[in-house]
Image 1 (cartoon, helix red, strand yellow):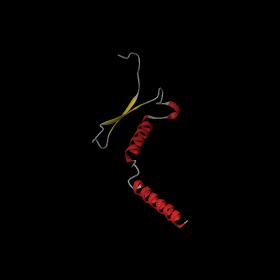
Image 2 (cartoon, rainbow, N blue to C red):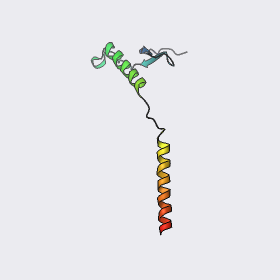
Image 3 (cartoon, rainbow, N blue to C red):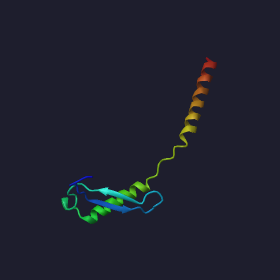
Image 4 (spheres, rainbow, N blue to C red):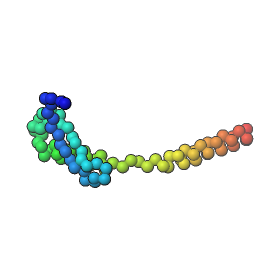
Length: 86
């Protein structure tokens, strides 16, 4: 049991609840009201962070294997050709 700790959090419900129901952001102490930051700005920043994380797409890496295989085959053929001619 934890005593004497109070935290402010922002809870954002997921737009696509297939895997996650909600995201919870824990605010730093005194974040609200600090440097003129309002609650609306905090909500907007939290939603922006959540949206940026869900919209990122990973680069497709399935072409790197065949590309390296072709490069290795060309290099092997070139070395073989040079050794037979010399």
